Length: 509
Image: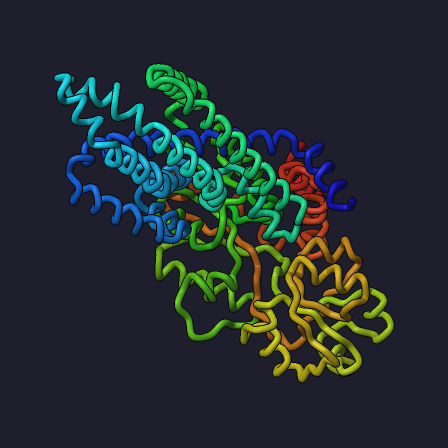
């Protein structure tokens, strides 16, 4: 019942976002299917009498399907950019195999006596192909197209990782924010699309070749007219700001947009929220596909640059991250904001009051009386619980591993006494939890700041001053509140970001 209420709430508050995601998903799926069919079917026709070449192509198509889709997307970014184009290329690569295989099999498995009869009647190759061979192979061809479409719709959810949009945005956000309602919404809509398109293809398979050709032409015209060829290319003459998955990055990039456009109204800023993970954004930034994205000091030092040690002093960590990223990739890293989005141990307010807990050292004194439930990664990784246990001498009565989506519920319901948390998680406010201070500075600093391609600063140097208005601004409490409004209350990130800037006189009304 609770899940149903959350689904209804999302449907009522995010209707425009859902419709936009559906439109993007349908566009990606139809375009990819048409291109894949346009490649695979003619290729199968050409090779139907060249068995060795046909078998070779089947092997190559099979190998392509074994490649991880994320690896293909990451590989394509430096060459074709971000957005829909790399997503379509990847989807086409995956869809060619079932269409080619079924078309090739359908054409090569036709009863030889029928081909001999057509030759005996003196039919031309073209007439024989369109009047005999393709009609006989059509059930197999349409079956391959149906398989490819279902595969495309499922795989297209990954387009969200590179700014391609689609229903994957809801799935990825649901995973990122532990919001099962959003995850379920994306999954249900994707499954519904697969069923609907599978049924449509079944209906189309019963039409004549001529009618299928007409229908295909109509699809192509509608797609070209409705979306425009420009949808496939990166817009020029703009500042493109991207953000990782989640409410917090979307809030930040909306702040960047508002501050830049206030100081230079003629400059247009394009946002790409929920872009994906660090590696995708970093590649896009270095290949000039995006211009700015917010990154954390700890992530720069742990993931993006090669360093033997990570300072635990926030200022020292920032300076090291700034200098190393400049030296390695000539990227500009501006001054960070005040808040920290790092690990912490969280307990209920009642537990904190009962045992007088403010710091992790305080927890050490009573840990033998308490139980804990940790995310699997935090439980296993050296820079998670094992390292924390050694640094503080923690000795919980019992420690359990549990999925990240369950651990906050477990603490709230007193099934465990403590869990791991990120220090700006909205669930801290939702469940009235207290994050204990890491008084020994075990966890590295994670302060967010704009990471910028220097080319955009050469072109628009004034945006540096605009973005630095957020330097040393936004406390942990303020970030938790904003994340709560966006992630839990489903407020628009643009609205929440603007309200903060107005309240703190960083933006004029």
